[in-house]
Length: 312
Image (cartoon, rainbow, N blue to C red; front, side):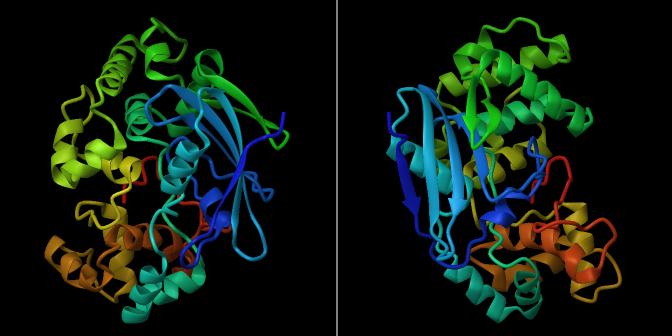
């Protein structure tokens, strides 16, 4: 049987290599071989999909879909576009770089970088519960084993990749090695919220970033930091300015010649030209500033920002 395919034509600059090697959350950003492999619960949770993503010399993004359950190819296309921030026109980001020379310099250092997102608010919330107060690398392995045991496993361009369990399957898991009882209880709360529709990306987007963050903070174990992470990097709000992100504030201060980390008021003033893509600008600062500033540890096509949450 032929594997369904679709293409996405980016509007404005986009680099799949930058997206694939941008490590954050449960993604390690290692092993770029020209194919980005995605495996996730489809919005609505009625199916899981594995997708092989490549980019041709003309910049066109090509995707091959492997599905489990009733995987609708158009729904997969929409979700992949959201995850790769291809549902936005990147030409506006180019104009921001023209207005702000610092952003322009960062764009030159990381050409085509757009913020890669979690697959969904549901999966972002589950990762927040798993990784809270635990080493990210350790919990990546636990998530992988949980996904292989209770999710769907796909063979994608010669590699195995497992999609996270759908909410109903997660609710059925009573215990699992490496997941304490309190975390399993909180994962069940995330699954129940997803089943109720409370974590639907479209619903949270309609609420707006502040109301959406307040909503997800009702989940056990989700405080202000993780609430912002779920909303910004799970839903796709593109113009939210994180004002309490120490690493971004410190890097921005160096880039803009400030002697001290930026205050909230100073950051807001500097970020005014970044509208309507302030989230993108802050992600770019975190990822590309080490390349521009020569910070030790910057490696790879995406600078591989390995902060566990990368909430900016």
